Image (cartoon, rainbow over all chains, first blue to last red; front, side, top):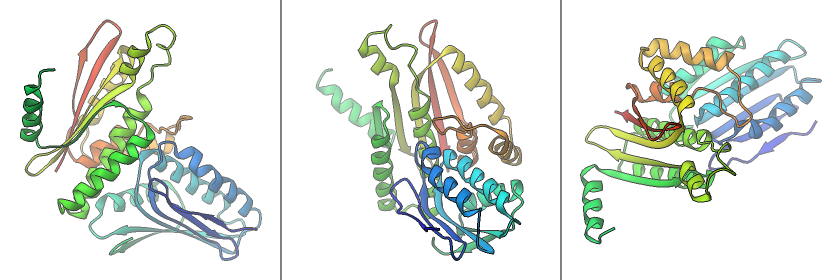
Length: 127
Length: 187
């Protein structure tokens, strides 16, 4: 299956998904006014990927900030990944946040509390 | 407007330490521009990365609230064009006091929505940090997302990020409409 490669913009993150390696990365800022439109291709892509996934699916979330519209879409994304976890693939999430960024750290904890995927919090100097 | 009131307005804005203000229709492009301007300003002011992010986050949510919730579909066709534009307009001001940023917004709102919003804000202001976190998680997990992408989380997020109570007032304009004033303090 083809990889997914969306370039980032002032309001949207870059999205890279390498199917053959099961690696998904979201990087940058996610602040579009209507995130449902933006995240739809990714959701569709995961549906296809889920039919024959790689044995391990690693999700790297490296966001500087995201608006509340995106936070709902990101949750839905995690729920979709929960749906394919254990069905031919082991999904794990790496949540990156910059040192001293308590808000982003807390945001990761918010998701950790809701979803059942293995979740790792990774503090870095700069995203 | 008298010419000398330009100076009065200048001085008021200077005294209030206003960094940016705008009155008009909030569009997607306007949002992008305002965010870019504020980012440059904060870089120039050498604010800490932590403060910059907080202010930026609150700003995004406040402005996107103005963008999404000023809805006058009902008025179109029954109200003169100029009044519709007026109804869709909002005001926002970004100011910096000594140790805190203040984001102020003002917009018209219908009476019914005003009541719902007032209830929500009262609820949010009555919560401490932990309660807000749980409330946010609950709405995030159980709430529905509208077709415009809104998730019912904006005000909760603003309260969480600012770390302060939301200051607000509803002014009665006429029997159908209020004017909603909001002040968010970030320190």
